[in-house]
Length: 174
Image (cartoon, rainbow, N blue to C red):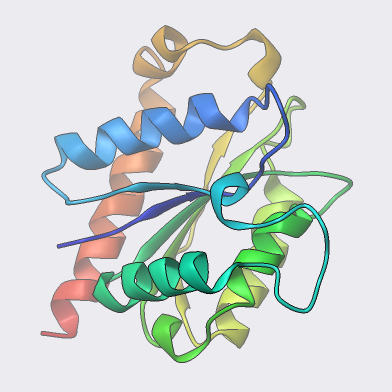
């Protein structure tokens, strides 16, 4: 089973990378093949008609063709998801069809990226993906470390539930 993880922001010193690294480790511990895709390595900050180079677009396409699902870890910026995540997702279409989409919200506030997750769920539906409900939320990130995540039973239960749902959907397609 191969499920890539997308870090949906490229802001310098973002807190989402801490959450993405933790999710990455948990996916590996679950015995799932994965890779961490950082939008900043794929998407140019300049908005153009071709936001990804031909080489990067091909790499993203090959990743999603191989993928059986996708996990997106992204912050909530102004009640939505980052523009670079939208640019990355817009590069493909049929490669997403009927694959489960796990959403992990990140926020320095108590909301844990809830509004971003709700919006991204709608984008997933438009891409003919199967969004997993509920999403996972990393809250109040400015004060958190990986140790805090390891000690958070509710967070780890939510992560495990996300993995279980991803696996159920993938297994149902066999």
